[in-house]
Image (cartoon, rainbow, N blue to C red; front, side):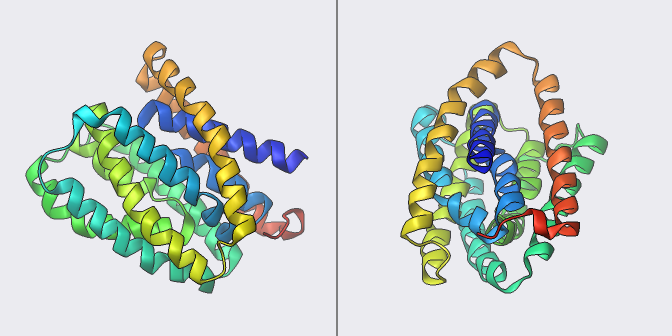
Length: 251
């Protein structure tokens, strides 16, 4: 029961992130699931929440469709990277994957701390969108967390919030469409895991309106600091879990 409550709270928190900034749900949910079960299980369970929440936000912000090739190049490259990363998911040791997730989160936090005002013009960003999207897709497929690359990249392009949300939503859906059948073919996404994935949509969707309400009332700077604190705690917990594997169940 404690594990169920923790997972539900993690998805609820992920929904708050998603509603507020359009991204960040995997950063809350995947580490929590990885701590209790395993990284492959966490990645598989997050498939439905990923696709459904992003479809909702694309519809919600349909009047802010991004212009230019960046979004499509970014999404296509992400799909290719997710396919590659998913194969790595089944071949790497669980502790290696957990450590990888922690390292990725740490790199993201370091970048946010030391380069908070970095910017990139739309032209160069479009050229970079393919290699960056591919790397982000590999991270998504292998660890379930691409934000350290995808969110950081789009944040320095300085898109407005609505366009950012639509762009990152298209990116996540492209990866999810590739990831789901690949996970099924590998036996990681079966009827049981798929059912849990659908159930996980509920707390995630419950948190999204809360995130939207918070971002309207709290300064973005303070909200970002809260996110970074939560991520830092999760990264430490992941590293600690690799030293005490008996405390985690298998998925």
